[in-house]
Amino acid sequence: MIENTDVDTNADSVEDITIDNDMAIEEFFAPNTKARMADDFRAGYVAIVGRPNVGKSTLMNHLLGQKLSITSRKPQTTRHRIHGILSNHEMQAVFVDTPGIHRNEVRAINERMNKAAVSALVDVDLVLFVVDSDQWRDDDLLTLQKLGDTNLTVVLVINKSDTLKDKGSVLPLIETFNESFDFADIVPVSALKNQNLDRLQEVIASHLPVAAPIYDTEQITDRSERFLASEIIREKIMRSAGDEVPYDLTVQIDEFKDEPAHTDPKTGRPRKACTFIDATIYVERGGQKAIVIGDKGQRIKQVGMDARKDMEQLFGKKIMLTLWVKVKRGWSDDERALTSLGY
Image 1 (tube, rainbow, N blue to C red):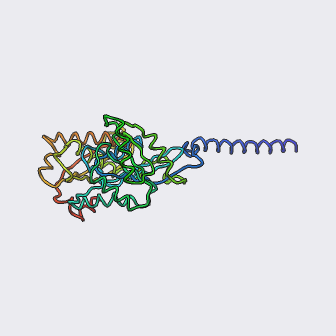
Image 2 (cartoon, one colour):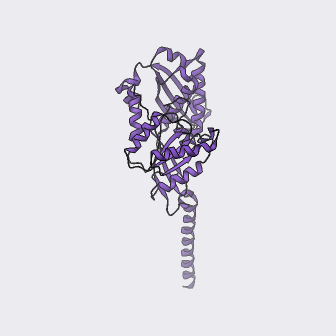
Image 3 (cartoon, rainbow, N blue to C red):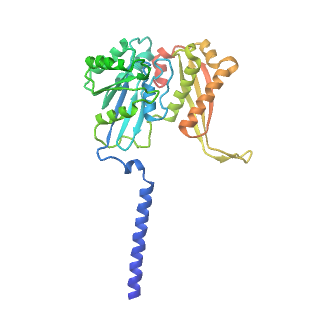
């Protein structure tokens, strides 16, 4: 009987040790962000608004520490609302990068861009109103008027502050802005040079409600890889073609197919995992098609190489990219065409 009792006791001990080991393994592989989450963790939606070309997309990219929203020197580069998710142990800010609000709704696409920007103000917890440090324009006032029609908490972000020759000149600028609107905070930054972004993150966190994370803390966007691929291609064309091709182009992903690592049945050789992407670039005129393709196809070839490089870095996998250029006349002022192209 004594031997049986000893055996039973040892079995219980082994079972307890196994349970303890299983729990230890589970805790080890659990996301660290959850383990370090603050008791007063804050989470909410933060709209980034402002007129075109004040650096809204650049600001979001640098806050995230990763390029997510496309940028170029041309105004109105951003056409869609894009969610970028910043998570740390204290907060989760879901940034809504919006098209620039502007007065000249000359085509249907301009009207849809303005609607996308204004609709971003619905159900957000905080607004970052971004302005250029040395340029105040009518479209800034238009954006401020839209914000005045809401009861939202607004933080003024004075971007490109590093370009001011006299750093003291930002103080009267802050006073001027403060007189025009009751801002919750005013933060001068340089998004491009990562200046004062830590302070901006602190301000954002202070205005978000205490809440659980909205998204998984490892997630950086709610947009699909297909969408991001189309935006990367469009960025490369806009940067390459400059003013030669204005806004009369868009990109549609025709195929996005993941192929796992496998052995080629014909050659017997191993092939790495790869994603095959076919995309069509639509322009409105034949002359624009020639510009996008370039002399002997050099421009479209370079666009493809640059886009593929960015995609591989963002998606973390090998990309095979095929591009086509087609003319679709009047698409930017055609409501049905805009809807079919995702606007």
